[in-house]
Amino acid sequence: MTEKSKERIKGYGAGNVETVISVDEVVRRTAAIAEEISLDQLDNLADGKPYVSLENLEAGYGQMRILHGINLRVARKQSLCLIGPNGAGKSTVLHAIFGFNNIFSGNILIGEGESQLDVTSLTPSEKLAKAGIAYILQDKSIFPGMTVEENLWMGGFLKNQAAESKAAAERVFDKYPQLAARRRHQAKVLSGGERRLLEISRALVMNPDVLLVDEPSIGLEPKFIDMVFEILNDLQHNEGKTIIMVEQNAKKGLEFADIGYVMVSGKIAIAGKGSDLLENPKVGELFLGG
Image (cartoon, rainbow, N blue to C red; front, top):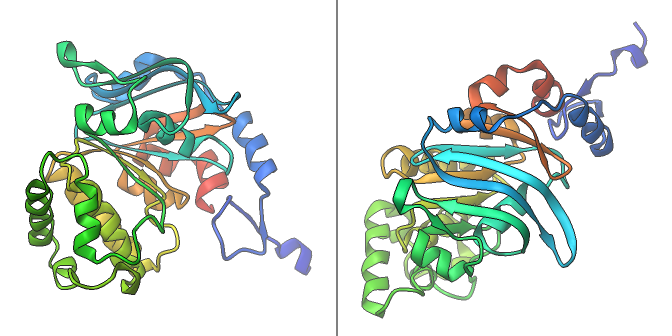
């Protein structure tokens, strides 16, 4: 067998390979395996009780449309992971839900039944205060010159009184002793895992119902990646948070999430249970390294 014949082609972002599929090739192959996805299918994945719904959403930046008629459903206390190649529009979905970009058409709905709220035109602060939506940014969103405690207080900027923010911060310290031990330290001295925990904890100060989590594993060592996903699992299953996540580590994200969407070119190409997508050979070839 020649060296050329030994060359292996693995999925996008899988790593530890001789040849990696280019982003353009992943986009082409993902588009080729895209399925027709009905609203009934999305509703069924959300157990027929969607708590967060996107309805034919068109969104982007400036006059550029990135999302093209996106529909999304996730139930209360469920988790959804968005995977796909760079440029697919994954983070744009989170930005649209939170209010970081332009909505050209469609709706963003939070809640169930008569309590459902159309939040499409609300500002990020209004979405946090009225609909309980919090955004956990990618790495490096903390204030490095502030202490851990001060960073947490910043998470409560919508609280009516400083005392409320401080009380909420104390609840976080009770929950995460490793942060409590660092409360007087400047955030810049924290390890990568501690910084990510602080970013998550700062969002929790407002006690949100919906967490938008952008690339929780980015830049972290494996031991810290496991820690972060354990924290997210606790927030979903023990505190009842609804989680919508973008994760480049597709295997880790789909192992965690109840639901998985594969995105390409601003659209949903495949939708299914996270466990089913892990077993899907087409998804595996492109995103799971197998």
